[in-house]
Image (cartoon, rainbow, N blue to C red; front, side, top):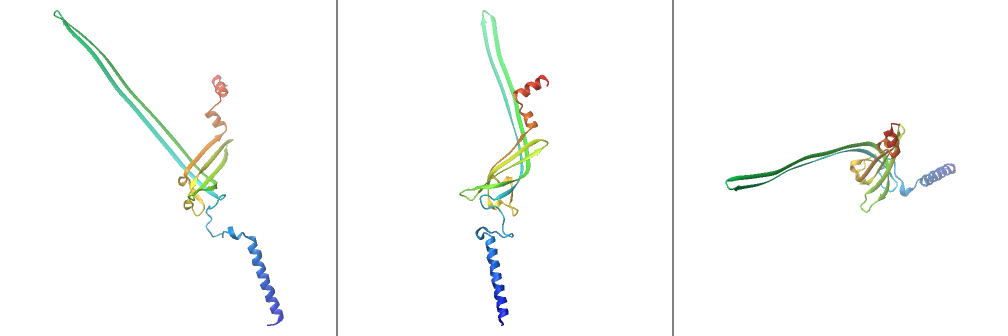
Length: 192
């Protein structure tokens, strides 16, 4: 083999080994995940998508019925004249009461893993703000999930969250009218 070919092959090998060095420096080898690897949340700070589909329906009823009847009577016969006195008290009560409540929420939000407990459960927390027609609504969520319940797309449905706390609150005119202040109630009563 002539010297030119040897030099060319040596230069090519040096170039390739240099590329491997540069390529390895670009990635954090300890935390590297290939694009085809499992991308589900595993660590604190990882992001998870939650599909919230909650429906709650509750109803209760109670009935109370009571009947009371008391009577007293006196009878006597004095010198051939009979004397009868009867008195009675009757009372009846029948009451019914019932209540029902329905609620539902459907949303998709993203939450962050904030803690991993001693059993390997991931504690998640997240919130989302949405403004519709000038009304700001906030959805907050927290709870614990199992890594096994995450889908391949790193998502979970809200019914799989342990100790889930899901809250929908609003700020704006509708919320203000739902619980008006004393002044607003006074002005409304006065017709303003």
